[in-house]
Length: 274
Image (cartoon, rainbow, N blue to C red; front, side, top):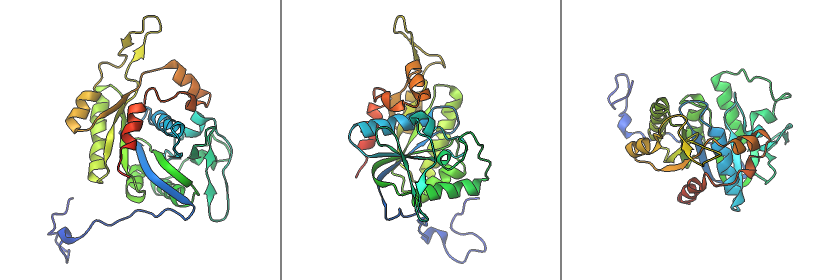
């Protein structure tokens, strides 16, 4: 129930209170300039792909990129980059893995003895791991950290929005009508938490006929422009279903996809105030 500033049993006026700052400071071995969350209201829309493409494109432009894989129960970032094995660390810090081009990566898969072992943890434990990934990992100098979040508006997005200094989010969607409603949930959560929305990326937007080059709307007509206009945010990219991209991801070579689909999204992120 929302408080109107005159709650019974409350000895002070809530309207006079300032919102509590729950941001966790970075450790002395981390200098992260910008934190960008990649979110959606439901699963299966391609958040990890978008996260990987954005981080790779930023790295290719000479920035120092990092990915904090906050999808604890369904981590796919290590596979996309072809990075395996356990992370090294000291009693005080963990050290992130690095991709072929030097993108720093941290994922729960780097802590498991077997990468296919299920993570059967309750929400508070998962939230604690996210906090540890931020404060106990020696990230070093990072220009852009991308946080790949699980779907929905539950514990992990709440933890990230409250505890990390998020500079903005990118909402990932697909063309179906159902996802339109889900996008608005993610948007409204970000607004509620005072997190800037950079824009929308529509994944699986269309397929390209290999013979004639015609765009085929497999999931129906794109809803991205309509939804973005209603919410007052830009469409940053429309990513097609591309078998070559899928093949590179499966091979752990997502960095070879390039920025052809996300160049406008990268430019929008770079325009965030320093």
